[in-house]
Image: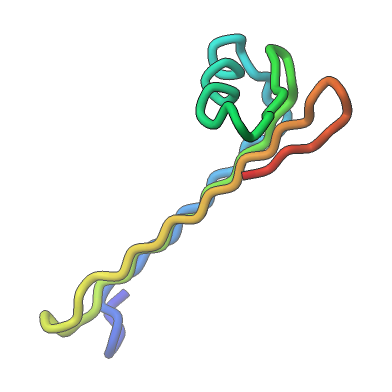
Amino acid sequence: QGGDVIEKGACSLTLIRGGRLSAERAKTISGRNPDAGLDVGEGDRYSAAALSVVLHSRSPMVPTFRSDVRVFLVETSGGETLAW
């Protein structure tokens, strides 16, 4: 904060490990892209991660930079790991 080029900046990291899918969430995931053959069900384990970065430059002529990256993993009851 208070640098010559970047006036303010922030970073946020969120991790979720070992969650269990509810029946509603599994149905939502499977229904998003039925042609993909995502075979997820209630009780499947999941992990998720999200990284957010925001930078505000000192110059009003340079726009604010924002970036978000997310990943979602599901371990199905059949032993397959799906990621998107």
